[in-house]
Length: 176
Image (cartoon, rainbow, N blue to C red; front, side):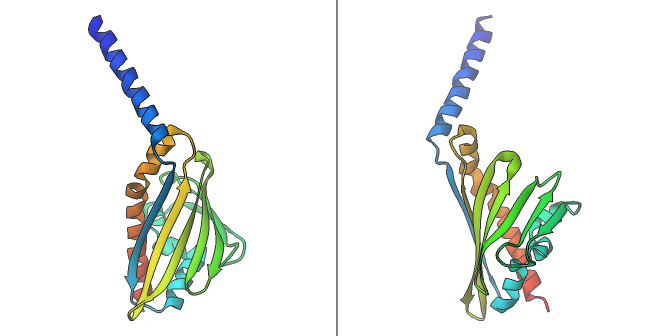
């Protein structure tokens, strides 16, 4: 019986340590990836400024082809938005908040089920014969100590998705 009490006490101490450390972790996260694309800025920008084009290059849509998507607002640029429902990728909303053709597109990303919002930016900068596209996303996970553990891991969780999406964007933009 003593060993059971020790095990339970050890688990309680570990849980308290996990939560306590969570309060000390930063609540902010930042994810960023980039790729060089051998295509004109205008061609690349057209693929990122239209929400309907995102399903052609982001990995999320490829992982769930049955994702239900609804579009609203203008077809591209500021105010263009879409929402999605997915059993594997979650439910969310994105709206373009800044558009400076052909080099800058800002957005707000929201996952209402988790009470999470972030903002992102795609930058298209001349690089040799092509452009460098940088994709960043940042947000605040708030004061919940469990969510702060996710902030700590956000780069490892979302970074590979950005890399895959940018690789797809590169293939699409460089094709004829």
